[in-house]
Length: 224
Image (tube, rainbow, N blue to C red; front, side):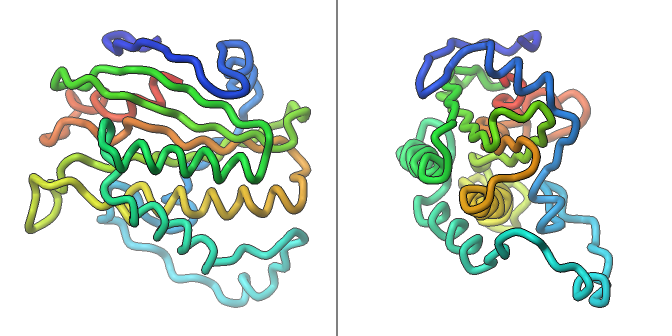
């Protein structure tokens, strides 16, 4: 539990409990933040991508099923079609159910962490972390994660700064990549254990940012 993070747990799913979550955290040695790794983006888009070495890409031949970019983009579109996925909204509930159902198509090992957390401004948020496990028996594990909620305010936009963000990039892109990877893992079991986590209540943070506002973000990750 993180100091200052008020939560009320509501169990749901195949395996809700501290035991399995603690076990997952124990064996993780590598954490990848997908929007940065695969799309070169994050909540801060000021950094420029390095040019791709085409010779290196051509020399690489993956042994497993091929990543399908059209499939990943479809997963992004399906999220965006719900509208802004702001906690406590109907779109948020609908998208959460969609993501849970989609992951259950690819693995029977899905954990739901459902709780109520309190945002920095006192707003009570209904939160749902969705975690899928592949090759569950392996003790060598990799965690791949992104957040699936969207920001209540598009405060970095030039127009509509007080309106919710649609989140095709910030939120949607990472989840789209992860869903496609989940699909591939369902076709060919990975050599090591892989956990895919969609964290919630990540983007309801202070608008002014700064060091004092850092802990106001990532409430779903803090709860996990």
